[in-house]
Image (cartoon, rainbow, N blue to C red):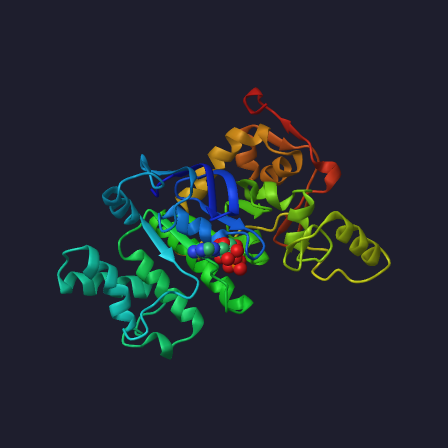
Length: 363
Ligand SMILES: Nc1ncnc2c1ncn2[C@@H]1O[C@H](COP(=O)(O)OP(=O)(O)OP(=O)(O)O)[C@@H](O)[C@H]1O
């Protein structure tokens, strides 16, 4: 099972420029989490802080009892081996073949024989759909393949935590979905804890178990996906709809006068862009048939049902609607009213938000 990552009160500035402050969240072991946020809100800085490449001035990031922020260089070196990182561009060495790129961490950090290295590299290339491409140079393959090669390299040291920085950058929507499917399949196969930072709405809505959002230098929220996907928070709604109408502006945020002026314009009929009718909780991506069940998803169900009573009503309803009738019986919950199911999408109308906990333990 992947490692839990506990982040408490993390604050990062460059000189006098504060990037974000007091960020606290826990990545549950083996679950897939995603962190959203408009461009420039410090998502990449957050990932780099988690692996000790940047030093936050306050707070903790604890993995297996080691605080990355304050530990010694030696401990940091050891703990970093628990992480596999997929950088935005794959961060491959341009002059090395895919084989050598993927073999690099094994040659750097282990004493494995070349035969053993070959076995591991070919296995990871196969896992990421790159079998047969080992002799290619990064410049000879597509952006999607480069990302998959970056993922293969991130996997060779058997990481417990995988950090992914904007997997969709430079990819079309279809390739983005394929790489998302690969994350889900890899998660099912190795049960590692994932954190994906992204501003891709489709990915955010369908891939992770947990969702958070950075805005105005703070973590707006972090929790089960259903919480953010049903949130009435203006910044969250605006972001998920990809619209101009709301607090996020051209270069991050707007003041109240600008919000009011634009609101008048949209009310007068100007299209705010984005998609108005994408609401509710779409079905989550599942492992490809034949790939094992995600253990993280099973644990998550139990974990979320224990905290169900602490979540907003719309999120509760969405979670209950995602359970099978047998699971609803097992957890002792019943939807108050029937939920509307549209194709593979389950939506819960606002008036259907309350639940009936059938047993006392939920509330
Ligand atoms: N090493 C650094 N020194 C100084 N400022 C930095 C450094 N790294 C990042 N920043 C600043 O931190 C802010 C957040 O950058 P970051 O790249 O983390 O944002 P992001 O949310 O990942 O953006 P995007 O979605 O566009 O990739 C930016 O203003 C950037 O200029």
